[in-house]
Image (cartoon, rainbow, N blue to C red; front, side):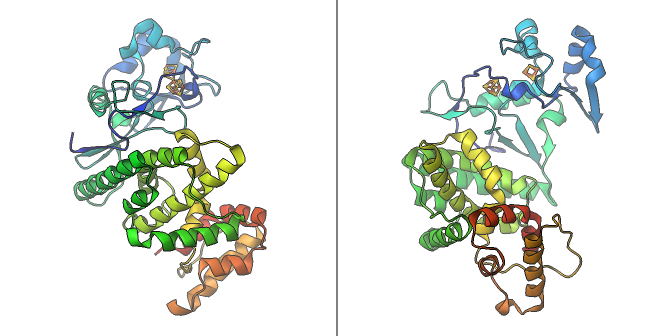
Length: 370
Ligand code: SF4
Ligand code: SF4
């Protein structure tokens, strides 16, 4: 077990499948082909063969957009109802704990916090245990389901570092969640003594971009955010956005996290309620380009020599890009910060600033590529 890192606390995360069918819509089905699951399914339901797809060694089945072939009108999985849970495709059996990654001899198990209404509760028998998920994973043979390889130059060394670093951060974050302690949560990821200064920067950036001050969210939202943070950290470190080299991500990630909490507070003022894991996850995804801008607010972007592909024809995005080119020709001490560039380039209108900065995500990422 010590080579496996789970991004959630043992037996505190729970869900009662509401049969909402959200996980059975439009995602296709992943089989434990190596474990013989596909052979059994095709033998029992030959019509599925026409919808199989192969990519590399992986075989999945296409689903119609609105629902899986096997999702019955009462929200039940027909395979499970008819043939038993063991016959259900492996990726469905694991869901929502079906994000299983390998790096060297280490395993990271993460969960889908956006779709399924997971909740945090006291440690008891209703909580999902790491041991139960580990046993489920061990029963699945196909690496396409439980063996997604994380990118690494030296997988064994990077796996050891990932598990040690994230497990340590996770322990402090969970302690912070249990106490509802924002500062302790920050200290899991960054220098504790920098907290007040970083909060002041996040406040200035939020006011400049969105005309909204930074405030911490309510305690229920904060507690949910703290429990969720290890999963979001892992997603940002190894996911597709890659705002910085992994080795340089720690301070960026901590500042993004702080900004996210400020926007969670702002969203509470819109909705008048606290937020759970799915809403906090989707907020992070939607706001990621803005969180990144706030994390870089006091840094100076500059394009490296060579052509930069602009994903947008928007004149304001091009104006930002030109400032990054201008910065290249200045010495490191003479470069304008992202804060100064935004203030000088974008009208002081939150609609313009937020939408332009989202459009400019790839430009801003390139401005900090080192
Ligand atoms: S999303 Fe979660 S609650 Fe909804 S059907 Fe799937 S497992 Fe059940
Ligand atoms: S096989 Fe069953 S659990 Fe899997 S997506 Fe289809 S209906 Fe849902």
